[in-house]
Image (cartoon, rainbow, N blue to C red; front, side):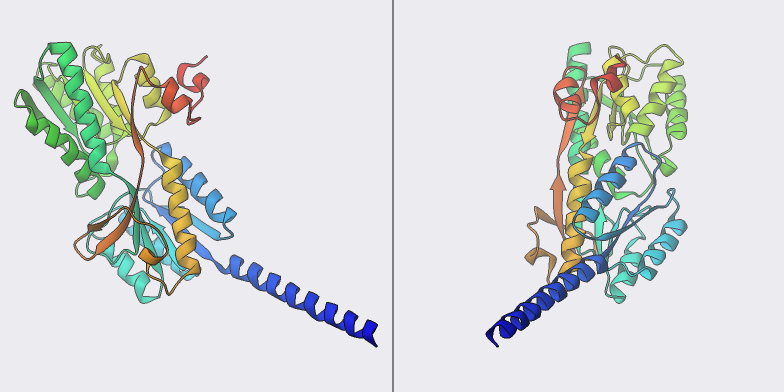
Length: 349
């Protein structure tokens, strides 16, 4: 009889544990999160995608990924598709930061939470934001330009072109404002170009640079660019004139695309801001899973935030991840040392 009771008890315990395990597996599989980027145009976004998906899946979530080719209407369609797939949290990098708030409101009406990624959207009830400090990116670029001009001209003076991204984009605005603060602090600087570029287009940035160089008789001392792609466009315009030389013209980019890091190593481009992708993407994935598993809790009670930023609708709890200024002297101790690119990728040997 006792033997029977022991067997029965063991059977009941085993059944209970199996049920509990199955429930946990079902729960894990039921966590669906979306990751929607504005584009895959820049090389860096392959890294965002890979890091986010790997981290999300490692935490037991089903990850739905898509991008929108810098098309606002396409992004809305893909956002709606993620809602239809049952995503309970969507991480969104908006094409249009001015209108994307409407997508967030739509998601909230369906009980879906939205985490902003990289670019802060305005007038929307974001649950969380994960970003780099875009204002600090522009400030770093501006400070590097000031030091370069001191070495080249013996004084902080010269003509400066500010090559900005998508019109109205909050990231482009923030990066530009950081650079503009430095420019305004130095009365010897003459801001001769301040131009936005639809779709963050490299070709359009090249055309802007060509026009500026023609207008000012090639006497542009510095180009500060909101991203790597537009910096490549500027370098292309300079190359055609034999001016793609960081001893002659200062060019700053941001995103650390491989070609741009190669340009820095070759002396064609002065600096590139490395917005570390892996911490940004992995943090976003972790936050998404935490929100999905705690649907009733306020984000501030789940994660530690660095600050709150008002986006015109609400004070958004925000997590900020690292940035770093890369120049010819520190490539090996930064980009290469941390495994972002290999020495062979950068130097070709």
